[in-house]
Image (cartoon, rainbow, N blue to C red; front, side, top):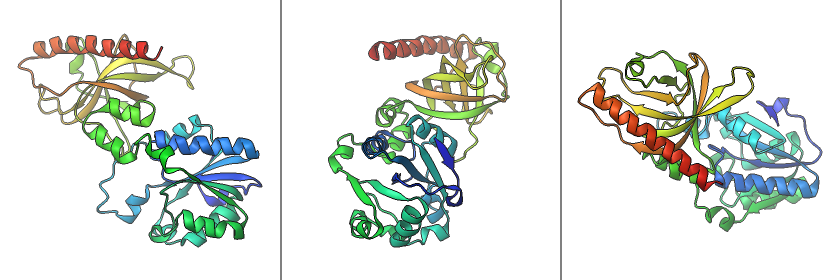
Amino acid sequence: MKVYHSLADFPKLDNAIVTQGTFDGVHAAHQVIIAQLKDLAKTTQSETVLITYDPHPRMVLYPDDHGLKLLSTLEEKIELLRDQCIDHLLILPFTREFSRLSSLQFIRDIIVKSIGTRFLVIGYNHRFGKNREGSFEHLKEYAPAYGFEVKEIAEQDIDEISVSSTRIREALTKGDVKLAARYLGRFYSLTGSVIHGKELGRTIGYPTANISVNDPHKLIPADGIYAVFVWVKNAVSETKKVRYNGMLSIGNNPTVPGKGRSIEVNIFNFNGQIYNQILSIDFVDKLRDEVKFSSLEDLKMQLQKDELNALEMIDRLSIEHK
């Protein structure tokens, strides 16, 4: 997949099949659109192009009142789309000026003149252009004049899986990472760097890596204890990662006051040094809510139960996917 961060860098194509949108999370409904994009590309011998935006349009249009948390950072979105095997990813900077483009300007100057679109694939309720004036009807009206065809994904093809970014965000803010995974078509994940903590976990036999998520807009699931997969850089190959089982805590550590809200992961059967490394965390299921224990010994006993429960969840998952 070739990635472009501006329209000026994009080479106009002779036979492009295009879709566009925010694609936050690249969830199951997005994957329906992408699958149809790729299927049509095969039958027409076209190159697939996906247009997305950075930052998210709501952050520009409502800078003081968007309250938006993202399912994927830009870097995560790029990797998720790479997994979808798109030929070209065009990331357009979303600005106030860009938001003022009319639907006709968007079609004429970007879709046709800059990209060379032969086919345009959109979701049934997709809107675009200034004040969201553009619609499927606009596209059908302009398509013959500008020499491209438009395909609308049928309502039932998207609605039958009942997925939206909003529903996924709601599930995650309740800690229901298993439901979020069903909507996403994969585990919800976050990426962050390992920073130094107080190292209290080592004293009770459960050392943790403190995770710092650099993007302030990334959605962090509800406070609680989770069974997770942890992807750690391979010591031999920098380009490969090894997956470990683990359990992760999000919250204020009520048993140890003064630590503040943190994300800490205990990686099972791992003894390496990973400070300053970037880890990726996949959320498997929630184990329990945060609890304040009367002593560190009580906390240790609960962590032993949590580890067994996490391994049981992960084993059950493996059986279900055989």
